[in-house]
Length: 276
Ligand code: FE
Ligand code: FE
Ligand code: ZN
Image (cartoon, rainbow, N blue to C red; front, top):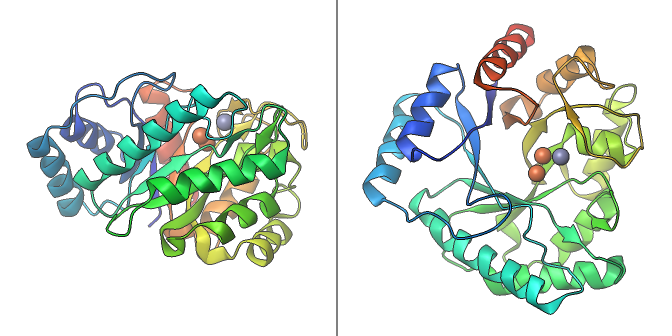
């Protein structure tokens, strides 16, 4: 059995999101830690968080993913943007302790013209100041499409960040299928080779979650436009191979496709149907 879910809105609280996941046949999900365009996070209700933990335990959920807001750019050339991002990261990691043992995913950032080297340094400095020894969360760098000045479109960039993170056992990667395809990794015709390269550069054991998205655009386009599963340039046959791949088939897999809740339920059913 695969671990499959999708991005869901947290607006009604933690237990409500867990119930919604169950209704659509999911055993994992992803949520934004706060409004994706920034702003304050909702106050955490400990009883509600505990109710979700109990629901996850009794229904055999895998780990869930909290996603940082898109505006969190740890390597902006603007100091105030970096400071806002650092405060968001610090606050989010503290709040994750209400749901211990789960995953926190973020976009490494856009260097906004400073260059990749400076970007990587600012990202790792922020991580080394925000992560703490007692934390029970694994922080994930998301593979990016390489749009604009995004850092993390190349496996070697993620590897470089990981190598410099102090709490090294608490950092990993979330592979987004649309992003890596748009970045130029041919997961349609050469998935084995792409994963071999990931393993060589980063180490397959660092891979902790997968975002399942088809792509509206062509290989290497550096665009980042998600499409419904099977309706884009990646196609259903590639997803069949990906979700059944030994090792990946044990990870939480999350859909971030352009769908309403019924569309997500259908995609989850589709993918469960082709899972071995
Ligand atoms: Fe993302
Ligand atoms: Fe993603
Ligand atoms: Zn994306």
